[in-house]
Length: 398
Image (tube, rainbow, N blue to C red):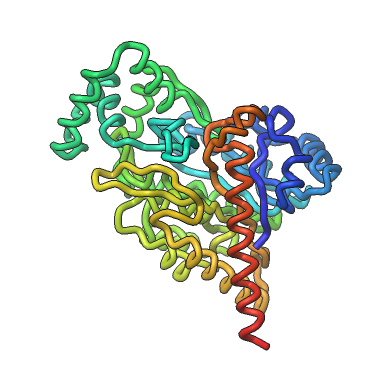
């Protein structure tokens, strides 16, 4: 597996020098200064690529080329935005950047309710609290019929939570949920998000899946010609929020997508934390069943709670079988080496998110989920697992 690091460009408080010192060999980044829907010029791509290569690293994965809302809803100027997307894929292929991560989540790309959830050891983690989200949805946003989407005990807990919040606490919760998170596309105010929710709410899961399929039918041929593979990120969280459709939350969802668009350029981003946050999820089985179409990996662990809440745990200590996941991914790489196809042989992976440690505050590298020391610890642990499993496999073949 190719150890990579998410880097947010020249303004990222984590420098490329620090990235290289982490042990990562490659960078995952995007041209966030270009508005969603517009073409990424080849000159801009090569400029970012040059900066990365001068630091002794390689730009291996784009995360992400945002999919404009007009494309997701098949409205307005979606045809122009789709052609712009195709041209961006061509430009990336010309530059030799071969893996594109993207998502098709409605309204918000990913969301949490707490960005500094306190752990027993004093570090901070990201958390999604179902009762707090319901409190915002039902009592602050006042989405029509929102209460129908929650269990009775969650509604009762939400009522208690909102009664304990003052105006400042409500504002902080709203900002956390809808104001945009690192790597996400866009931020909204309450009026804007209410309007957007209403547009997506009229779509069933099947109807929204057809919008995704139509988009891929439009762009995958261009990706194939450009030598680019696309890996879609799963829903985060992997269940319905704001009454909007969810179409990539389960093994079956992913299986439908790769079977419907069978071209090799159409693939998956395996985000262990996103798939794993769904109760009953078996992430190892997802890798076993669909590993040949996994082109990029986010390794993150979670602890689930009975009401659907979850928080992001240490990389090797959570409800996901991280060792089993990595073992299956390494098996997949071995199969690719025996019969190389359209995809790359070494699967790029990055330590997804990390706890905010005390020293991260000193370094001021505290984008939510993207602290330096927290991810450094995660990468070191994951590299240890990869090295051990690889060594054991080599010994078994001798």
